[in-house]
Image 1 (cartoon, rainbow, N blue to C red):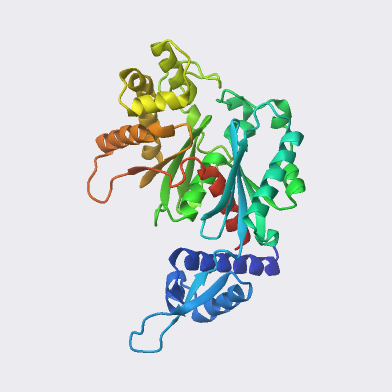
Image 2: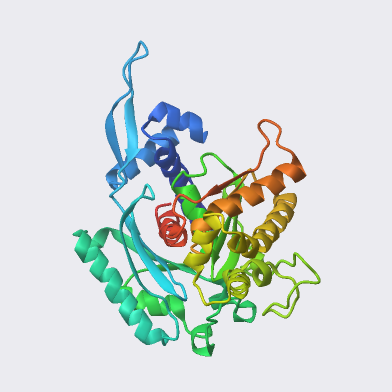
Length: 386
């Protein structure tokens, strides 16, 4: 990289740092901003001036007097930039529009890809996204891009653990280009679990946490890992493929060819099969989850292997990366999510202890069902405002 490129990259990094501090801690004064970022007053002032000129930041009054001149406070203009986030699923697709705070200003749902062909499906997807923007009365020019959260099975079909694995045409389809052409926008693509983790951090739901894991179950099971405030992707983009962690070497065969994978024991299909065998009739996931929450023994017995398998997998993950919290998201947990939270929390407390200040917290996502879509939009904002 030449010297001019290095300077431009450094400026982008500095701009992104200043904007993120204003976004996460505002309203904030220039003095506090300089202290928080470690930048010199002159550098910080220049960056703030450009952010004001670009309309990303606004002055929102003055702080209370501490004896001298009252300091002007800065805050991000939440509506200055918007992003579209799409959670592309096999059974359902979620579309959201978020502002710079990570708040959802509009959402819609449509059927998942199922057995649809890519071109036909993406045509309908673009129409739905345009319809959502129009229904909200938003200026299309403020939408700076589209984030696409996809299940791991679309990226790595050999490990598909869903009842509706993609066929070859989806596996080889140029998804990014297909969406970009139809929506006339830059497109960011990420695994659903990692996108959800990014969204959780962007929205402030995990506070100042620098190391946390988001477990996402919706057909597939994945972990979005954030360490030192940054998402972890791995050398080949497969970091967090929790569904294929072996939790029982003598367990059932998995679609990946191994035995005892988390998906084979704890996936929605496995739990539902156990429940159907117990009650002797065909029922859906919602029936199973509601029955378990109500205390029905057959339902609890059907879910217990899943809860225990998740507890084992998460405890191993905590051993490896030492997070301060674990977040659960995805429709696969359904209304029984509290049972999973309780089971995982008990295992972590039992294994690692729970002294004050060091307990690993297990909690639901602030957007259990739509977390990947919201996170995909956050990735767009994060990649373009720096």
